[in-house]
Amino acid sequence: FCLSVGIFFLQYFSNAKPPIKNIIINTIKSPIIIAVFAGGIASALSVSFPAPIENFLSLVSKSASPIALFAVGMFMAGKRISSAKGKIFTLCLLNLLALPIITYGIGWIFGLTGVPLKVSFLEAAMPLAVTNFVIAQKYKLYEDVVASAIVISTIVSIITIGAGMLFIQS
Picture 1 (cartoon, one colour):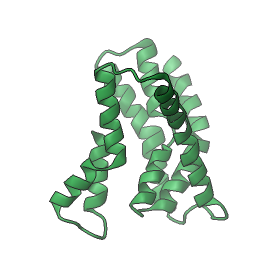
Picture 2 (cartoon, helix red, strand yellow):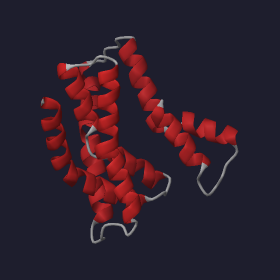
Picture 3 (tube, helix red, strand yellow):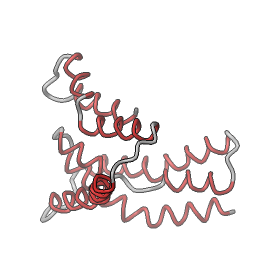
Picture 4 (cartoon, one colour):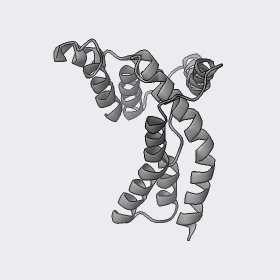
């Protein structure tokens, strides 16, 4: 749901400013959205695929993140970290500090404890996902900022995840 809303707003605030009807159609036709819905339907219906198709889908799914990371690396090759340091700092701050704290607080409010609370916290504390770069590149919006934030948040997450895990252990 969040991904489709994000893609909708990316199109809405783009320079082209297409009509709302076109934005909705483009969002629904987005390969990312189609894949999410197809996977959800297949999972809900407990669809099992023949072994060759299952193996192919497994290989494709395992290669998506490394290919996206390679794309980030190629984009950043020979470039410096973006000069938009304020935007990068904000993205990293929200992603590495605010989101885990909010997730922990909401989990605690709803009575989560132990491993479920720790897993929720840990998942929220992960660095900026490479999917963000793929989407930024597709819509030609802040590619340099997103790529820089991925690199920085990945490096800084070593510290923030470790510190966060120490905090929630106590």
